[in-house]
Image (cartoon, rainbow, N blue to C red; front, top):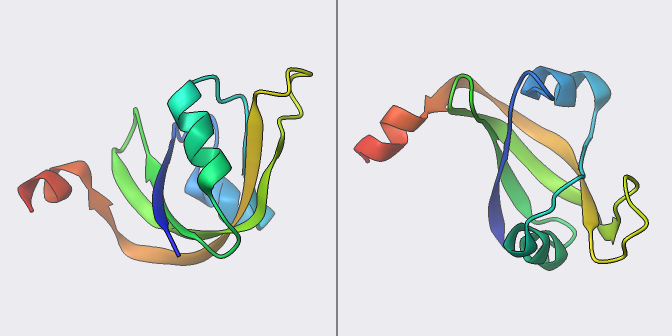
Length: 102
């Protein structure tokens, strides 16, 4: 099993949105290295969900429930999407400052 970090701006899609919807599909990724990481994710792999740009903290843990598939926002077959579902919310989010301090 592999472990990953997924970052998303909370004003676009927050941890609360993940919890409300019961899953999170990451799409519109147009960075080749990020795409390669999405392709490497396998069923059951675990991820930390990081609020970027605002908050800058890890909010909770997710797992892969659907491996890499065609990104629905493009017909270009190079770009992929992966679907996750929440596993655990952290009572206290882990701040970037705390991460850097360790």
